[in-house]
Image (cartoon, rainbow over all chains, first blue to last red; front, side, top):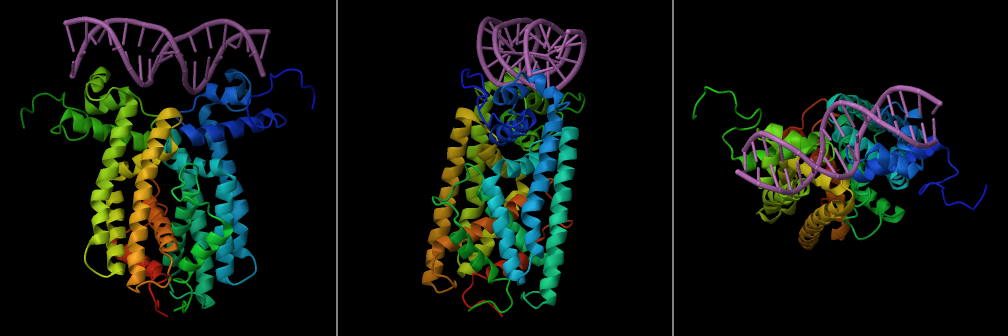
Length: 215
Length: 215
DNA sequence: CCTACCGATCGGTAGG
DNA sequence: CCTACCGATCGGTAGG
C-alpha cells in the first residue's frame, strides 16, 4: 500500500498487521512447529521482521510471550465453543454444535490448540507450573460446564445414564481425541474431517449416550 | 551392592542399570518434562551421572537419542496393546482389553507416550520430518489393524453400523483422548482412572457401537 | 525500533 | 568414560 519499492517488508505474515500482532502470530506458529525450547527469540524476530532486542518492548521475556498466548488462546476457545452449550435446542443438538465448534476452532487456529499442549507438557520449572495451572483451570472450567450441562440433560430425560460426571468424561475424552487429531502433521487419516463425516462420527458416538439409543 | 561407602552414585534412576539404559530413561523423562528443545545433553548427563561427552559413546547426536526412544516406544506400545485385538472373546471384549492395555501402558510408561507426541509436534526441520514419518507409520498401522478388526466385527454382526472405517475412527478418537488424559500433569479430573471407572466409561462408549445397544 | 554487547550455555569433537 | 576445548547461539540488557 505505502510503497512497493523495497522488499524490506517482513518475510512472512500480514505486513499490515501491527508489530505486536505479528509477534504473537510468529511466536504461536514457531512454538507449534518447533516447540517452546526449540524456538529462539531470534527466530521470532526474524519472522516478525525486526531485530531481536525490539521484541523486549512488547514482553519482558520469552516466558511472558508464552503466557500471553496461553491466556489469549483460552479466551478465544471459550468464546468460540462455550455458547453452543447454552443455545436453544435439545441437549443432543447443543452438544453436537459444541463439538463442531471445537473442531472448527482447532482447524482454524491450530497454533492456539498447540499452545495448550505446549503449556501443559513441554515446560519445566517455575514457568511450567504457572502454565500448567492455567491450563488445568481452563480444563476444570470446561469439565464443570459439561457436568452442569449433562445434569440438565439427565433431568430432561435425554440421556441413558444418570451420572453427569461419567457422561461428561466420555464426551471430553472423545472431543479431545478428535480435536487433537486435527492438529498439523497428525493427519493419520487420508481424508480431511468434513462436516459430513464429523456428523456421521458424532451420530455413532451419541447413540451410546442418548436415552433409548437406536437398535 | 558393591559398596555403600561413596555417594558418588548417579543422582537418580536405578544405579544398577547399565549406563545405556539409564541414558534412555533419563532422556525420556527429561524430554517428557521439558520438551526436546528444553533438554540439554548436559541435563541428560547429569541425571545419568556421567560427563556430557560420554553420552556420545552411545549415540552420535541428541537427535539419534530421540529416534531410538521413538522406535523403542512404538515397539513397546505394539507389544503391550496389539495382542488383545487378536485374543479370544467377543469383539466387544477384545476391544475393551485393547483399550485397557493402552491405558495401562500410558500409566506405566508415560514417557513413552510423551515421546510420540514430542516426535509428532515439537520438532522442526529434517529431524521433525523423520520423527513425524515414524509416528504416522505407527498410527497408520494401528488404524489398519482396527479397521480389519471392525470389519470382522461387522461380519460377526456385533456392531450396529456396517462401516469399519467410521467405527475405527470413533474408537481411535476416544482411546486417544483417554490415553492422553492420563499423561502427567493433565489430571483435570480429581480422581484417578481406576479399572472400575474405565470399565464404566467404556460401557457408556461401547453401547453406542454394539449392535442393538441397551435401552 | 536500532546497534552493540553481556555471560552462560548449546551440541559436538579431539585425544586419550 | 574422562578433561579440555570449539564456534555458535542462547535470553536478555545498555543506551540511545
